[in-house]
Length: 120
Image (cartoon, rainbow, N blue to C red):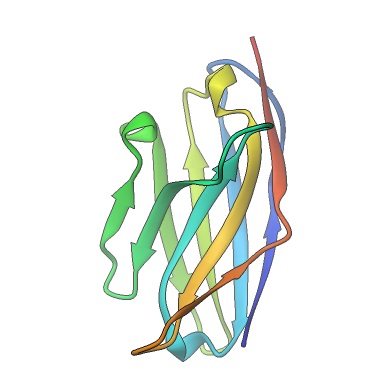
């Protein structure tokens, strides 16, 4: 199992920046990728960005050039960051950390979510 604990959400004005952090612990050697999803009210949960074990990052088109995902590792935990710059009101959502774990049958683990609100 993998446990995910997020931090870093909040309220920011349009054009501002925030950094989200997510600490993954537990069976971290089985993690295939870590990422961030977001869900706005009345909408589905969508991928924002993820990063593979090998360090390959993938971004939603809507955040390319504005958001950067990165990861740090130590023996006990992995920490995934999402640096969000040039924030827009449409970035407002609950952001969820996600871990894709296991092979060949993988499963997803989710954090509790952190609110990001961008005011215009």
